[in-house]
Image (tube, rainbow, N blue to C red):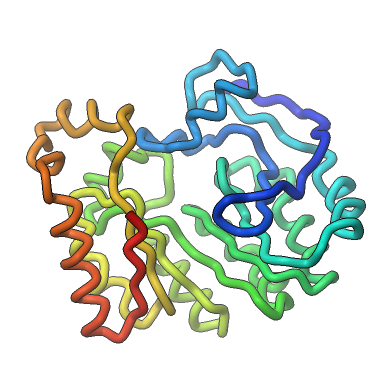
Length: 247
């Protein structure tokens, strides 16, 4: 793993998903096989394989303190092209520092992670008046999880993290994206732990080889993602969970 400390030029960036996004890191230690953020290498000049480098924006706190005073208040996504709670966050606390600034200025926030480390910051998250905290969960089958995201937090830990956040009065969600085999069993596990879910399909070419390598080609068949997403939506409706299919 190649780890560098860098000084970024900006930290509060425009986003096509929400108004703003904060990425405290360039790269991600989790290195999930399907991650769309691999495209970042085209712009960052990294030659290392995805998942084998992380640049740490050590001046993130200083930048945000300045930029938040100049921009119109709106929702901030943490994060878009890295996991804000990847293992290095335990040491550097950049996400925590940024959250504290956002809380002090009453900015709305959406957190998206795969890591139970988010629970460390539950004190700050509860201070933010408008904050949704979510976990990316792709399957209920941890053996499938190990094929696609072997370095990420086990599924049961993500479910338990959502429960802790939800029981603390925080609005929670699950991002079932991309749909992996076993995703259809997630609703039972998520019941009572999330306020809503998003569902998205697998459409990342660099993950198809994993399907084929482990003889999962049937999950690439036409109609698979449509059928599973509708099944998830139907089960969610029965449980009274708001569900959004986004493809």
